[in-house]
Length: 222
Length: 244
Length: 57
Image 1 (cartoon, rainbow over the protein chains, first blue to last red):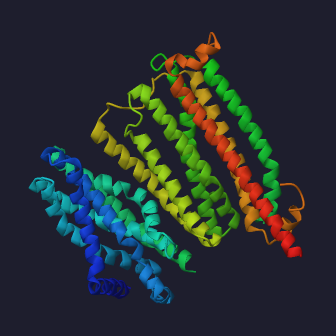
Image 2 (image 1 turned 30 degrees about the horizontal axis):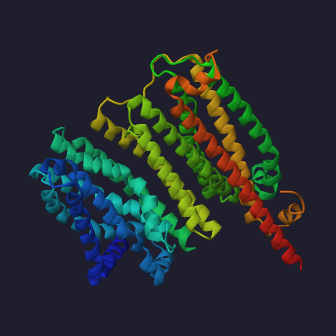
């Protein structure tokens, strides 16, 4: 069971490593979106500090959505998805593995880039740490919930825009708790409550999302 | 079994056709009674003047918008669990009406907010969750519209609907939490503590009218969907001889 | 009775725009929904009828 999970994750990460162009696009998308905000709003440091956490978080949501529509699509096209579905291992493990791989490929780099962007927005060091921590707890949620959307829209025309429409509203709690944790540090009211709620939401999505996206895959492929 | 008898399209179609006029008539009578109470019996509010009369639309619409989403989820769950086609038809038939009520709740909320709070839109917890509910409705309808195969469209929409219904309390809680942190108690929708008895009655009757309207409209939409889906069957062909 | 004349009724104590804007939009939405529903039903009916006559030929 665990070996199956590990194989799924390893395979996807290897495939992504071979196609570095696609991977870099998503990361640069994140950087560019965040950098556009000061240009649109103005360079006033106090203002930037207020909007910084929210901007970084919204850009993280968009960046994770950008790469989602390919989560199952490539495997579906070359037939390996159907092969994997025929295997005796439970489907939920496959979707869990896919979500973990998506997080390793797209989530972890965000964690490394986010502090640099936080500095652009004039965030103090304490807030930077919490920003990274909140993204570390929050981005797996994005990958897990996103896998549901990717499975539901598998093979549809206009899949990318549709995934955004379906999944964005479900991301709301992650956005609120994640950005709220950083703002809690800035305003001095603390971030523990936000982070524990974010953690609870992660546990909930970890328990439910793989099953739901496995069911969605069955609906989409049959 | 008896229940399965009602779940078959050929039974559902004429049966729904007979029920629709009754529910429509009930909706009309209740709406007339509710509006009469709302405009002619309920007294002027001592704080909000006549402006509060929007409540007779706003609150029932908001109730229905949430209630319909849950009823949709119920039909979706039944459909997925027992594989009954007609349940999916019901879930699909409810979605546009639910979205309509959500829009009405937002619109009337804005028109209420302007004179009371001085702004068309405030990021109040309830208004914000209502907006996200509208996005959830739009998501389900867009997904079903994008899938050509009705079997897949039904199931995919049902799954998304169920995920949404699990998420709605989390979203509501998070928005409320976010709202209290950011705005404090400066803006709140709480009405005067002693709401006149007649106001409450007017609201309840209007909500009942909206409920009956929803049943009538959803049954009518479900009938059309059923016709489309069962077009190859004998009973639809026989029906087509008559009037629409 | 709350209202002395029709004029005061439509004015709604200065809140006319908001109250009638709300009730008007609701009426519009309900009417639009019923209208669209009826049109869709007629369209489906006509299409199925046409398909049936084609099949018969």
